[in-house]
Length: 120
Image (cartoon, rainbow, N blue to C red; front, top):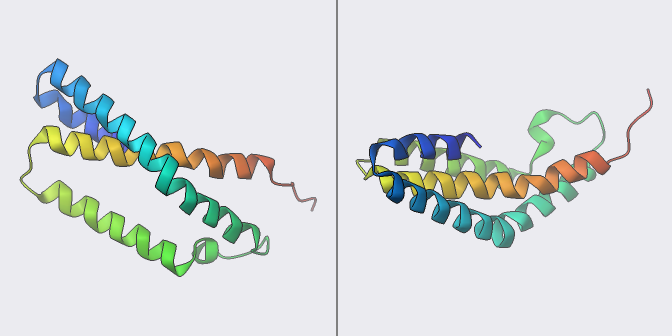
């Protein structure tokens, strides 16, 4: 969500019509990316977490491959913020990635909501 907010914040530098078009395109592409790419990753994470004991450490929450993916995404985001790219392009990329992640997180929230509660 914060990536999308950052993208919308960057869009203030351009015209309103252009900014709205870029944001709408970013949201649409992000949801497509979320549906066809990130949903599969979220499904694997749900299965991985479901197979863990209830007192597992935070580091074991994700697989090593997921931690590498997270690191690559952080490095990509930091690099993107430092590059001298037009604000409209950064807006589109931030909104696309942020909305895709937010859209796919619905699967994790649903799995958490439907998980059995433990009795102490």
